[in-house]
Length: 189
Image (tube, rainbow, N blue to C red; front, side, top):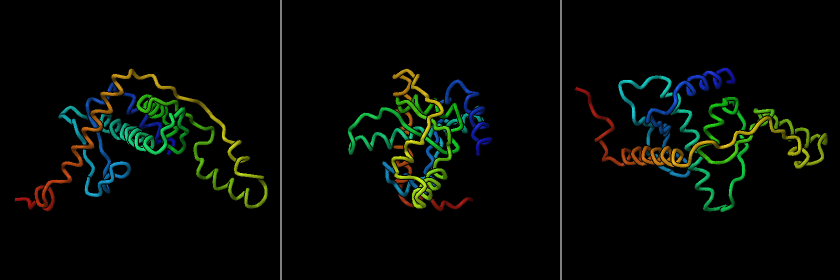
């Protein structure tokens, strides 16, 4: 997974922009906060010059845009400002992804020393159950930050990218609303 994340970093970083390509990964519908089970994955903005780098970058960017969607939805229930976001998992090894996530969310992104914290958490809970650790708070104290990515994108660039993402999501939802037969089960001649 780490090698894959690094290869995607090189591909995504090879372009100075997303070339106007947006990928909406609604393979089983759109989840939170859109909740549209009929939506399907779509790519917008491709041209005959669009290559693998732009498609890879669009896929990586889509994770960041979806994070913004979730943070926006959460802000209605929890109106506190997000001061930083802690991440983990294989994608956290991708420095380009981490910086874009910071840029598009407008929040510092903290990457831990141990990025596979799901396994670490399971081990910690086992240690807690075995009496080797005193409390969950003691486990939380063990988290260590490796580095932090701070937002560096201009606000007008961030707003433009997010507006185009929202247009892509709306177009995906509009396509899902077409009458049955207009885009499903069309026989080929």
